[in-house]
Image (cartoon, rainbow, N blue to C red; front, side, top):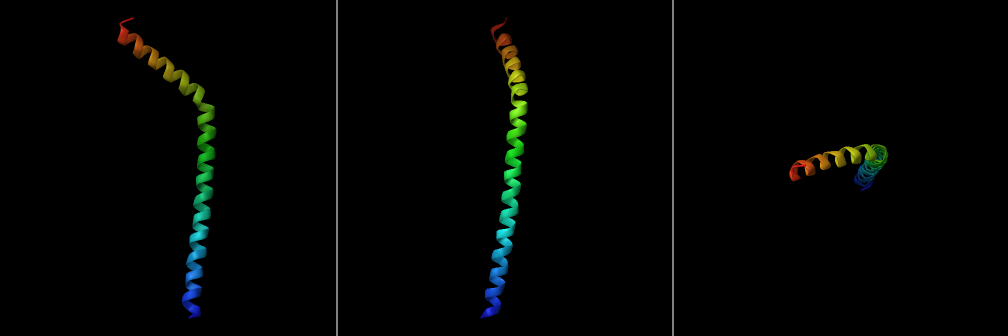
Length: 62
């Protein structure tokens, strides 16, 4: 009875380690994404606004 229990624990520990690694990776990705979006958001907002203004102006025939 000890062997299957041991194998079970190994699997549980392995899954836990994988979970921790993926969690850490997700946290890093989220932090990276938030930093990048925070630094680039003004540029993207300006680009988006200018594009929208061009589109609106064309739409109104100005």
